[in-house]
Length: 304
Image (cartoon, rainbow, N blue to C red):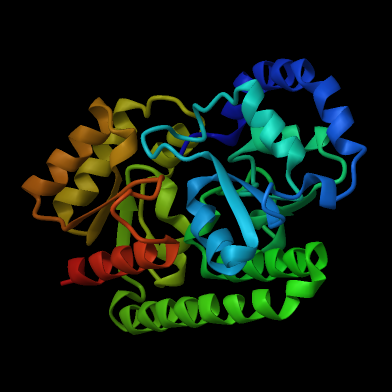
């Protein structure tokens, strides 16, 4: 995982973009919620990253128009630079669903030009502060908290459709509860198992599964600071893999470099099971629930 302080590198660029559309946003912000609804009268919802779009769409159904700013799975929120058109979309929204915890600070900043929009911050709803691990869509608690907060705002935005949204939420919750049952079943095998990760993308999922993080601390500190681990830390990582004390390696395929490739190679030679994942939801996955379910099954299968 890249250090959330890395987002400050693009903060100035984001501020410039926000400033460029400020006059447009002022006009939008002074309107009523109905004036900012979608063209067909549905609730106008904008999500910052695609990981949350399926949740917003599942609950909003045909009564909400959901737009994802970062919909390309090959682009990470770390590297994304919003265009003026993206900022305008956010400024026109009735509800903006952001990930939070510093992961999509460009979106949070843009909401400053949407004073009438309601912002649902997934991390905040789960009590996860900025600067903490930002991959909160992998947390069962965060998914439930964000979905509930989003439901509340949908019902406020379109009170006549309140029961419709409630029914959609219950259907989503049924899927989420089935996922959590799968997690609980897998946890009977994964509880206490030592794992390591090339990056801490799966931090919350690993916690939900009761896995024990054995990634060398020096390596973790370096990757969180977006710097190259020291040779000694890399070698410590390799020795732990070679010794068999690490039972599973979790790899973020979107952030491969020479160091992580070396770690993967060592794991393969040491016959340590490898679980591959990405930060962005693969296009082949139907929704967030099915994606996380497939990852849980991959972890479960990797446990010997």
